[in-house]
Amino acid sequence: MMVQRYQDLDVYKLAFQLQQDVFRITKSFPKEETYSLIDQIRRASRSTGANIAEAWRKRRYSAHFVSKLTDSDGENAETQHWLATACDCGYLDKSVYMDLQRRSDEIGAKLGSMIRNPEIWKPKER
Image 1 (cartoon, rainbow, N blue to C red):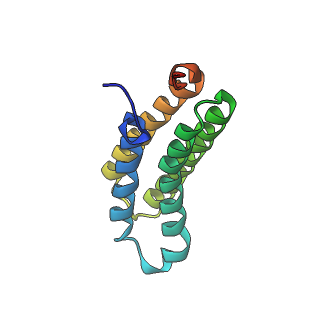
Image 2 (tube, rainbow, N blue to C red):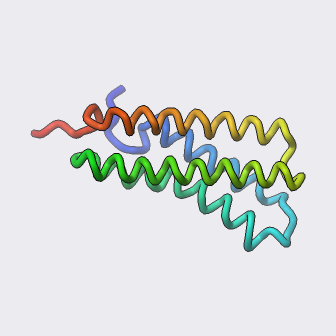
């Protein structure tokens, strides 16, 4: 299938699903974490996909595309940090943490591939 929209990208679909799962899971975190850990982990996980969407619109210019994908990769790494923090605090079961981490690693690998090969994503001139 030819990718027409950022919503068609596998990496975007994975990032969006991870963000939704993070949102659902953090509902069970302690209330005292509402304005700290919960906000941080939700923001970072949401920014991963948002930066992919923004990168897609800038793909005509490789440097801009790579810059936004790099931002996305950074947000993904931040999400991993907050997931590890939540696990260490006892808010996440170790098996849930490991699954989220594995999925985040997959997102990072796909972003890395896009960053290394921006030219294949450049739109064709009409």
